[in-house]
Length: 171
Image 1 (spheres, rainbow, N blue to C red):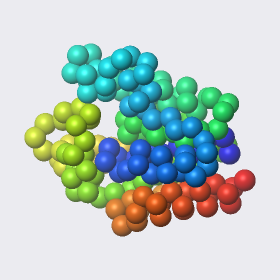
Image 2 (tube, rainbow, N blue to C red):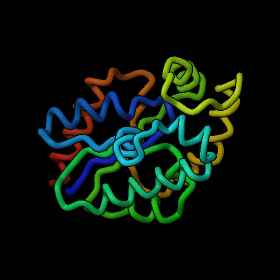
Image 3 (tube, rainbow, N blue to C red):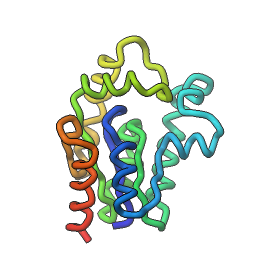
Image 4 (spheres, rainbow, N blue to C red):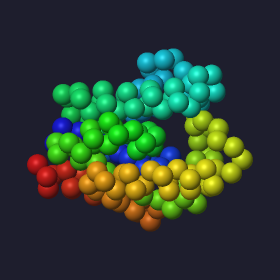
């Protein structure tokens, strides 16, 4: 396995769980938001506000494709927007990747989303916004054969342990 890739809605816990998995494996963490900020000197919120959502999503797709293509094993926390990009979904079907899909109910994601100030602003009703994203993106993510995990009822530590176990079983 070359990489572990965390996917899911904003607020599903990708970065939190990804950090734990990276620490357990002693692999570097690649986080979409951090990679974009290092590349551009701006947060994804700033890019969205100044350049538009399409530009932000294009950068998110680019950093995922580059991270997956890297030869050094890593834990990759992908932006949720990658589910809208066919090339990203195709890249995630690579059998040398373990893709972990952190699934949470929209209400849980919305509650977590509201607490994260670095995220782009998507109006006054994050639950409706996230429900629309989930309706569009979840069927697309279902096509990649990811390890699906209930990230609402399990702790980040338990989720990380399940991902590391799944990785060991595939090696």
